[in-house]
Length: 192
Ligand code: GAR
Image (tube, rainbow, N blue to C red; front, side):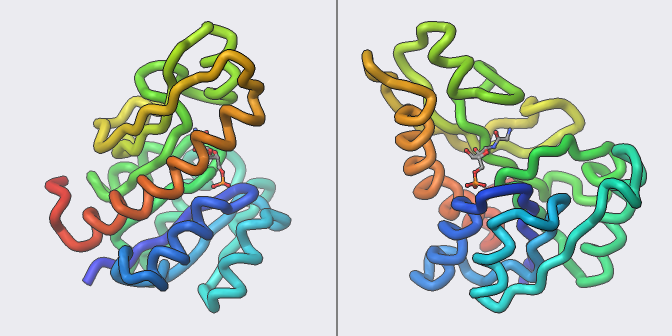
């Protein structure tokens, strides 16, 4: 049985969707840990409510990508965790983490990659005048949103869309897509 951690930095709506999907039997098990780089992340409330162990890795104590990564690997390995699900973790994962969990780290991004990687993907889509955007679940490598794409879902950009309205429609799609992909990674039906 694979054990997984969800890494979060903020609001935690994708974590909430994962927890709800466990309750519905779509995802086979609860996360073994919710790890954050932000001690005031709202996501921690969802974790605590569901009785999931939480862990704060303080970037001020572990300066730089390498040290932060070493600490994350140490904490997860100590719990026997072999799979990582990034859910709004706004930090670039170091080479050490990628190498410690080969093809076992997934991320969700609010655009149709390779279009609009990095920050504010929804704003980038609007600024570019894109007619279509969406979300992408991908394996994480050392680049920024560059890993192998697992699944994508298209969302039309509407004429009067703002960053808020487009983000909300994409987010709704994220909540449907991400738990399903996580489930397939955990039950072995996704060839990694
Ligand atoms: C989501 O829209 C997710 O796709 C995005 O951050 C949001 C987190 O929301 N991630 C990225 O942009 C990663 N590059 P949440 O905290 O409510 O799940």
